[in-house]
Amino acid sequence: MTVDTNRRRFLQTLAVGSVVHPLLAGRPAAAQSHAGEGLEALWEEVRRQFAFRDERVPMNAANLCPSPRVVAEQVRELTRDIDVDCSFPNRAKFGPLLEKSRAAVAMQLGVTADEIALVRNTSEANNVVNAGIPLAADDEVVVWDQNHPTNNVAWEVRAARYGLAVKKVTTPATPSGVDELIGVFERALTPRTRVLALTHVSNVSGLRLPVRELCEVAHRRGIHVHVDGAQSWGALDVDLRELGCDSFTGSAHKWFMGPKEVGLLYVRADRVEEIWPSIVAPSWGNAVEPRTKGARKFESLGQRDDAALAAVGTTVAFHDRLGMKRIEARVVELATMLKAGLEDAGFELVTPMEPELSGGVAIAVVDSARRGAFVNALYERHGIACAATGGLRICPHVYNTAEHVARAVSGAAALREEPL
Ligand SMILES: Cc1ncc(COP(=O)(O)O)c(C=O)c1O
Image 1 (cartoon, rainbow, N blue to C red):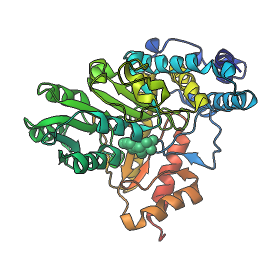
Image 2: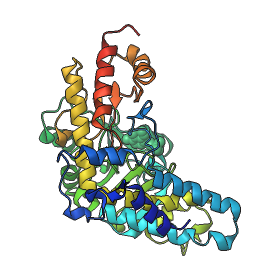
Image 3: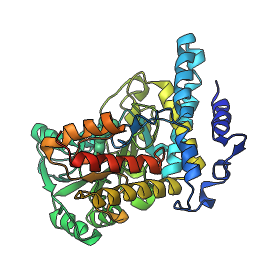
């Protein structure tokens, strides 16, 4: 099946009966207003684009998301196509499809295709930057202590191997606002600091860092700002030029709702040449004249899952039907409903309530000794799949409805009173 056929099928699957919902009928994203318009019917329709059963509701977008049918079907069809005919001539179509995916991701993030590498996941993308950025033994890297191990422990491993100072910054558990967060990081920077390694939205607290302001602070001192966007790519309306960071990473299988095991690595054009690739495979060419252009040099990884890479562009098309502004507004709306409901039910929140300090990751305090059993019971008894990371972590996305959120809250409230 061709991509165009898939696109047509996608539009057809968005139809409500024979009528396409007006908001999904191809109005440009820019013309769409924010969510909060009382459009539960639209969100019910979006939910129907996903194959999960209402008895097993995914609310763990920070870890893994389901893909909409149109994306899952394309991966299946293209994989089948390769199994039927894996010749070079039949697979020639995957080069242009990969470039189509790259262009779509670049367009969505407001950057150029040459600045985008489609690697395998955030872990790999973080490690490309970590291992490839030239640093001397007495240079310093400042990291947030809430960074994922791939953007935290990985720097320490490099330091142990080649020498490097790694300084960890701790932010207040309940920051008073953006200014307090900026101040904490600014005070940690020294004349030796070469890299500031951040996370856009933390997977262990849900706290969102003021990345744009931190980039301005760091760039005044010539510091490279690396941002792990695993919890923001696909959840928030990310404009990388506006954000201003030098490198940014993400996983298509998280909030992006794309194919599994595809990752994003953005490296700003003027930083590409300086950063070494971690893996050199045939598409690299030779060290003198690399065949890879721009950030493509970071995805020279040997044989890839071509079907998955092709489906990235289809995922962006799915987002475009809704518009990233609307997706962000819905994610924030659901997360806010969830946090307010949990607070009303007597839970203390780990994640701030304010949208400027949070994204879609919502975490409430549950004693660490009870967390695992709590999360299991929420799944077994109430059909809500979430995680025990940093507390009770529940991450709603556009495929979740107000009923899912209400069920998560009432289930958590009931379990709060029960011995587990
Ligand atoms: C902030 C952050 N970075 C990186 C990762 C790793 O993602 P992946 O396993 O897709 O590489 C995660 C996973 O949860 C994460 O939350």
